[in-house]
View (cartoon, rainbow, N blue to C red):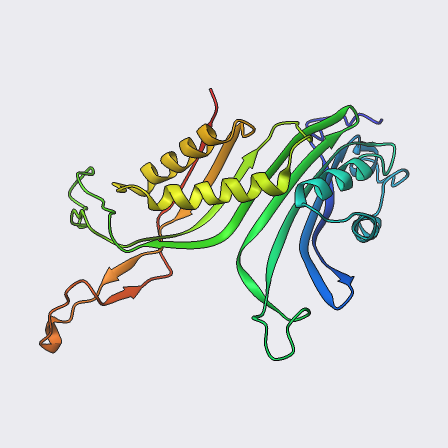
Length: 287
């Protein structure tokens, strides 16, 4: 490897392929199943000869990475995003000599079957709510991390939430409230460490259920507290989970003033804002 001289050096290098859209259709007789994925891969390794010297020898093309994703999906049952991410990362880690680590990120879009009609609907679907995510990092020496998650899950509590007794200064105009609408779009990822000997499908369903249960089952004095409580409950209920990171944007629903129209708003009419919004994030981990 050529070492650069002078005032600069290549501190880190990675490259890969993003937004690889993939749909696998399983045809079990007349009843079909859909696996709809968005895959991103990143390769790490000794790439200085390419970056510094412009020498492309031993460097796999990102087009090859894309093709590898499709071939791997054809070979894999796609029984879980985590197992596919692991299999793909293990394969990509050995795609070329300079590569020493591969990271795979998968987003799976859920499709539900349409209600059975006169002739049944074994092959008609509607896009479901929310997305499942999976991530795997594999090095030459083995698995480094496996993680799962959810994204774009819109939830709302119409009461039992507030925001009061917060810090005030001369620019504070927001009043205290002990009863407000709390709506957010949950993005969460939880890590299993380097474990691959898990029932990923059952665990994903159980963690997701715990997240939604914990969101709903308490009075929330803040989104921050709700985030911590969700993470705490997930960690306590699932010994396989080492940590969970969440992002909870505050999707504001504000009471609309009806008094100019001679009406009283009895906490029933709200206007919904897209921006600006508060963004609360944090990580809860096992001690």
